[in-house]
Length: 191
Ligand SMILES: C[S@@+](CC[C@H](N)C(=O)[O-])C[C@H]1O[C@@H](n2cnc3c(N)ncnc32)[C@H](O)[C@@H]1O
Image 1 (cartoon, protein in one colour):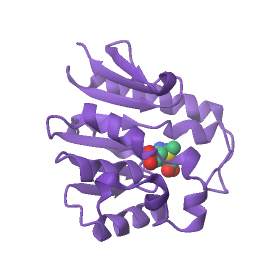
Image 2 (cartoon, helix red, strand yellow):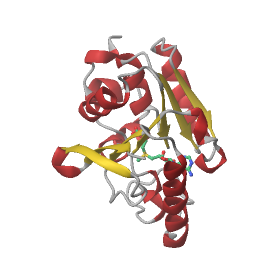
Image 3 (cartoon, helix red, strand yellow):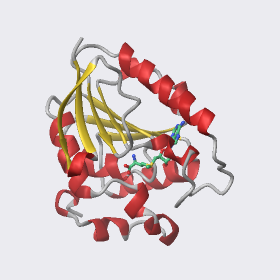
Image 4 (tube, protein in one colour):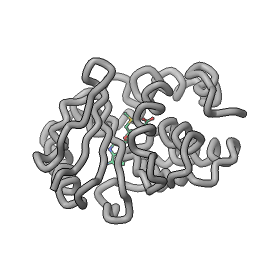
């Protein structure tokens, strides 16, 4: 399977129906993965996808560049699905961690991709987890926590954000460019 040239429809057909049905809102479109990884993946360093879901960003990105691509996801079933596809596609530079992002040591990673992972706490549309409830306070805690982590990262750290209002990006970062009508933003740590 040539992942570098696969269409969204073809890629999504590898997912069970329940996962495929939410692809339009929950998983990064391939055209967006290509733009994000062209920015993040130039120096073959490690890239963390924060909330890797069903693995779409990591799997496509891993097929496009030699960087180490790591996804962390709190839903175990999605991690297992991602790992199954990673083996099927023969990707050696991709790995998935099951866990909460709050438990992870950010200093292990060079650059980051963030597709609005905490939105599920304030918007229940297309939710995969029936137990989720609206929790704006927790949402704010997570945004503030991530902002702090990004602020502690070294100068030159790159982040790509997709969707959301980017309140997780500290003032110490500059917006390098944006795309997709401002939904896709490319950041770098200035100091
Ligand atoms: C919008 S999806 C994006 C999936 C993937 N990054 C992609 O682009 O294909 C966000 C994911 O973040 C996960 N998530 C939310 N909060 C998390 C947390 N605290 N730790 C780990 N994963 C989390 C959700 O379970 C969901 O699968």
